[in-house]
Image (cartoon, rainbow, N blue to C red; front, top):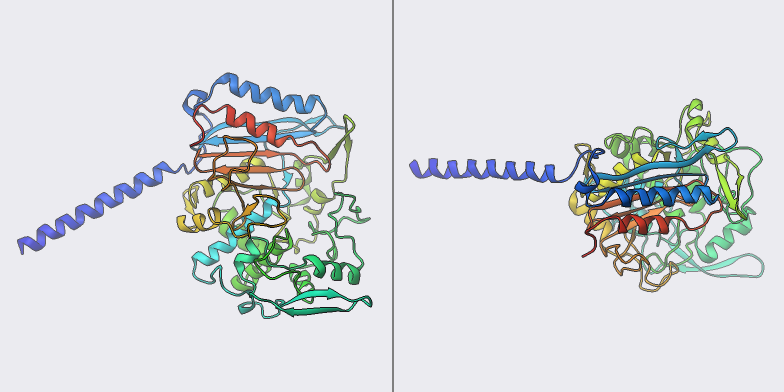
Length: 448
């Protein structure tokens, strides 16, 4: 009996120690940002912060940027958080950190995380065939387009999986398959306002992928239309950016039984406290958005605001997985810190630690791909495994992405650092790398 009691006491002590250790681990991962940390506590200097201020102000003074928002946090301590320029130049409304930005492809990582919550719930696996949940998914690869417009196909060598969707290697809408679709639909698939893509006469409801049906009321319509065409390559054999995450978003709807927008809000955005990030808003929120501009020949030229106007549409049913989210910079910083924390922030666990590792450490692309030399991609993020960044301080553990309108971010676990940089400009210089280097240089201890 005494032996049993002693064993029980030891067991209880182990439980207590485990609980203390667990609590200690929770404390080690910051659940809120510390906005009051001094430069010395962060490992930088007031002069280094002033140098970043001067750099961002120079972008505005030189008319390279209309409005800029920037955020950096190390160990959860906010090193930098400020805005420069004008939300609305004509009306002399200064930019602020609370301004809304159109995020475009920054939507993709959030939607990918939303899908991975389904994986963590045991409802699906990343290597499951997509056809298991969506039998209509193409299983043929186009090999030739004939002179009369008909085409020839062969069976895929590998079934499409969810990992292919999350790494943009599904083959959907790629290569010759994309050529066939463009010819049949007679649509310009360049994003409106970018690369010469035409601006529509009427602002669509929500934000739509170039070449899609701007009148589509639900994402399902676009995805059912897409799967009528074969694939452009065997899944996993190449990189073709963008449309795969729309299909991933639609599969979230099919598996969860809920609209994409609501599932993402309930399982990612709201738990993290990202209350201002959304696909849609009430009409009075339009005043929260920065105006769009282009930088040309040393001048800032007003450009179309169709994307922000689409976010306050009276019809709020169309939500893509690839683009569509909007919000202020500090909201998205919470998402980045959650990933850096291995799945937790705001006292909420969004993903398991091993799930974050699965997404951010394994390259899913072949060595040679159209992303370029050394380009690697995990599940939802570009990976820096081969240290291809021109900024030497960026560690091999870093991962990142951004949006077509000029929003960028990086998450660097080795340096315990997140950095975000926001613009909304159609045409612009490459300002983000200059800012990012300045941030890394401002920190005393970086790198391996």
